[in-house]
Image 1: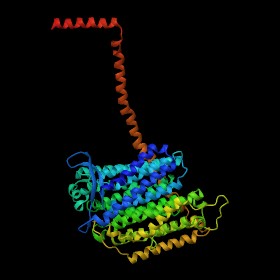
Image 2 (image 1 turned 90 degrees about the vertical axis):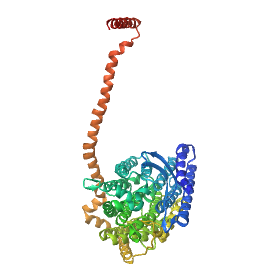
Image 3 (image 1 turned 180 degrees about the horizontal axis):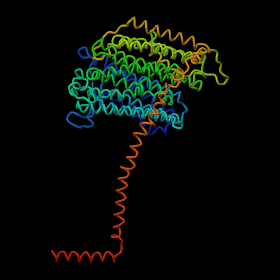
Image 4 (image 1 turned 120 degrees about the vertical axis):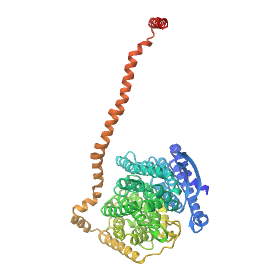
Length: 637
C-alpha cells in the first residue's frame, strides 16, 4: 500500500504550487487545482480504507498494523531514532477518510463562499498545508513524527484564523490560538522527552506492544513528587492534547478562532486541529490504561466537566459561530470522557470504540453545521441571531440540512449522533455512573442550545426582510457539500463500527442499550420541546428568564470570565514574575556580558591601533628598536 504516501504528498505539493505560483494564477484556477488535488486524496483514502478493512487488514481475527513506508531520519543511539513513515491501522485509516472527506467538502464549498476575496489563492494554499499537516499527524509511526506535524497543524491554524490580517480581531485571535497551544505543547514535548528517555524509543509500536510492557517495565520504580514518572510523562503528553482539543482551562482560544473564514472553522472543528488531542490519547491508549491509569481517570473527569461547562455557556451565546464553537468543545470533551472511562479488552473497551465512533460521526454533522452557518451568514451578512429569523422559506436546502445536523448532534434516532453518543453514555454507565449523569445532562443541554439556534435562525416569528436585501439560497457549489454531509449525518451511524475499531484490535458486536437510549432520547426531546416553546415564535419569555437568573446569566454570557482570569494571571503572574526577571537577566547579564566584551575589545583596539598608522617613519623606528632589543637579548643570553 505504498501509494498511501500520495495522500500525504499531494496536498504538500499543492501548498508549494499555490503558495509560490498562486499569485500568477487566476483565482478560480487556484481553487480548482486545490479542490481536484483534495478529491484525488479522498479517492486514495477510500481506496486505502476498502483495501485495509475488507482485504488485508485483519490477521488471525485481529486488526493488524501495516507500515508501507518508513525511513530513518535522525539517529541518536542504537535504539533511539526518529523515523518518518506511514502507519495504517483502524484509527489512522478511519481518520484518513474523515480528513479527506471533510476537507474536500470545505474545498468545494469555499469556491462559492470565498469567491472574490482578496488572497483567494493564499487561502487555498493554506487549506492544502492544513490538510497535509493533519494527514501527516494521523499516520505518524512514532510520537516525534506526530509532534512535528502537530506543530505544523498549529502553524496552519494560525495562518487561516488570521487570514483576514487587516482585521485586528482576527490577528488577535490567531495569536491567541498560537500562544495557548504552544504553552500546552511545551508540556507535550517534555512528556515525550521523559517517555523516550526511559523507554529508549519514540516508536508507537514499541510503546504500545504487549499491553505497553516496555513502558511499565522501563519506568517502574521511578517517582517524582510522589507520582510515578509514567504518570508525569503521560499527564504532560495529555497537556498537549488538552490544548489542541480545547479542554478546560485551555479552551479559551477556540471561540475566538471563529474570526477566520467560516469554512476554515468547519475544517478546524470537524476534522483537523480540535480532534488531534482525542486522536493522541487514543493512539497511546494502551500506555494510558496500563502504565498511567490515574491519568486516564483524570482525563475522564476533565472531559466530563468541560462538556458540561461548554454546554452551559453555549446556551446564552448569540453569535451563531460561537454557539457552534462551544458545542465543539462540549462534544470533543464527550470523546475524552469516553476514553477516560474505557477498559481495554473486548466489549469492556466500549468507551474507546464509542469515542472514535463519535469522532467519526461528529466530523460530518459538525462540518455540516458550520457550513450551514456559513450559508446563513453569506445570506444575511451577520453572525448575530438577532439579525436572523424566518429563513426557512428563503433557504430551503440550508434549512433542511441544518435541521438534520441538529437532530444528529441532539442524538435523535436514526441520525448518526444517536448511535455514537449512546455508546459513550453506555460506557459511562457501566464504568462510572457519576460521569454518566453529567454526560446525560449535557445531552439535554446540547439538544436545547442547538434547537435554540435552529429556531432563532429559521423560525422565530414573522420576520420580514427589505426588498433588495432578502436572503437567498446559496449557490449549488455551496449547497452540494451541505447535501452530501447531510447524507453522511443520516447514515454513518449504521456502520458496524465496533467490528472495525476497538481498543485491543479485536472487533466485537455492539447493541443498543435500551435504558440508555430511552434516557438520552428522552432528555433530548425535553430540550427540543423547551427550545421550541421559548424560541419558535417571538416571545418575551427568554428575556424574563434571563432577567430572573441575574448574575448567573451574565456570568454565562461572559463565559464565566475565564478569559479575564487568564489575562489577569498572564499580566500579574507570568509577565511580572517570569517574563520581567527573564527580560532583566537578558538585558543586564546576557546583553551586559556581550556589551562588556565589545567595550573591552574596542578599548584594546583603540590603544593598539597606532601600531598600524601607515607612517613609514614609525615603522622604521619600531623596526630599529626591535632589532636592537633582539640583538641585546641574543648578546645577553
